[in-house]
Amino acid sequence: MKQSFYDLNYADLESILNQHNLNSSAAAVLFNWHYKKKENVQCTDNIAKGSLAFIEHNFDFSLPEIDTVKESTKDRTVKFLFKLKDNHKIETVLIPFNNKYSICLSSQVGCAMNCSFCFTGEQGLKRNLTTSEIVGQFIQAWRWLATNRPGEERILNIVFMGQGEPLHNFDAVKKACEIFLSQHGTSIGVQKITISTAGYIPGLKRWSQEIPGVNLALSLHSPFAEKRNELIPINKKYPLDEVLTYIDKVPLNKKQFITYEYILIKDFNDSPEDAKKLGTVLAGKRAYINLIPFNEFPGARYQRPHLDKVERFKEVLDTFKIPTLIRGVKGDDVLAACGQLNSKI
Image (cartoon, rainbow, N blue to C red):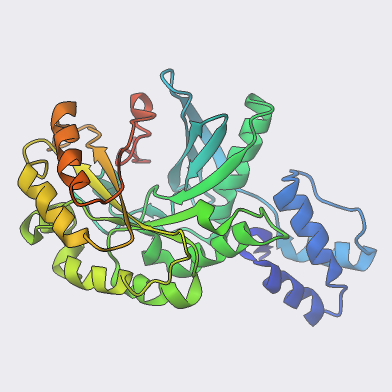
């Protein structure tokens, strides 16, 4: 069975070529062809015939198949449903901003975290994605832009905020980041990649040593244990205080912050008392807060609060001098907004 080329970081590929007494310069050629140029045909230039034969015999260059595409009529957000080789499906979102795009990647088929505010949680966890399935989302989305929105193939930010808990699939996500960051690969800047977590401590323990510099976002959503237990059940196993202790150990660059995501739910966690407690918990930290009014989905038990209540919540946080942004909603008309992904529908 052939190995996926897209499961290999640059060092892996060089090592394989060296082990078979082949010129490792082919690694640079292949990475340039498949990650910088993102071509969908095989490269034959500047690679020796023996190396080409080995590559053709041993490597698989297939990518996840685009099953369906939904485009928002409101804001041009694009949601992809990808079909994997075992017929499982995942969703990926392209989010437009200032003639560029952020891409929201999935890391698992479904999710084990069972967060009550998230549509993905209703799927349960089917399996982890491979590195090639993560990287493939990026490449296929880029190629779609090149074909359908020529001249707009600028995906400058990567956020692991799609389906799944990224730190629950640490090894594959880490290797995908290595490929995205590689100067031979897509050359995405280290602070242009953000990994979101519900607070999975085993992954946080590995963070500082294995993927330093990549941005971290915590799904916080309530500073009160009882409420957070309902929203994020793993809070019972990994309480917020312990999670914040590990996050405080993550090394940050000079102008880098930890992002704290806070979904505002009507009459649940949107009171001034919630805001004051949140401000108290995060005061003094290098924190940036994203306030996200709840995005409703079929069967959701929660509702979105009125904007005036969201703004009052922010006003309380402003008194703590913590940078806070009310995140705009994009793609909700095609169930592509935060918390709305579910590849079973």
